[in-house]
Length: 265
Image 1 (cartoon, rainbow, N blue to C red):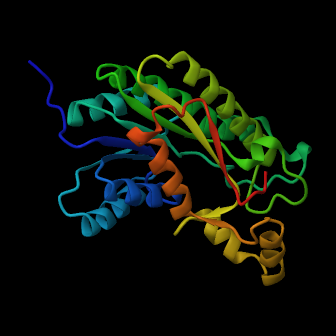
Image 2 (image 1 turned 90 degrees about the horizontal axis):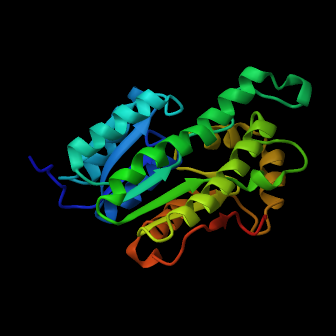
Image 3 (image 1 turned 180 degrees about the horizontal axis):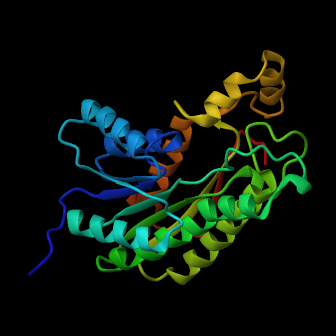
């Protein structure tokens, strides 16, 4: 029996329950994608579905809650996505972060925190790509957008909104290497692989915005002044960059890291 194939393109967004994932989901839905949203928080996914349903009547949204550094969970998630849609046109791996532990010194960085941050960023990105690519190959087309960070190149001074910065930088640097190598490996397949490296970006909602807004006025001003354009970026600006990289027009853009950081890099 042949598998049903969704008429509209399908974007899988990890970290799709909040923060940048929300802004990316809104933009891609507006561009005509149906969505599969993956996030560790079931409650956040439910809120996202309510928001999207109100804004985009008729939009198909599949939500899957789980830890994306767990291979068995990722395998089940992508099997379910293929069963539901029969295709994946774009994978946006925005899940991860620096964790909630505040680590200011190497001696404070436990092995447990290190592994947690690396797995939530690098391992989850690898696993999702590994499971998305076979589905993309069936149609000879796909767009993968990973998320690195300005911090991958090292960051001097206070860590600001970043928690376990060393582990975070190492994992985001690994995503750059993964992106470049996978882009070469898939070069002849019709699948492109790119990464976005944001600087300080404030999504419409989420922990990073909350952390920035909880800083004192002088600290916020100093943080903004350290960015050459004089302000943090917005989630909408990141979503616009993602929209280009997942478009058909980006067919010759692969293995690239796009810095969206206000000239901070």
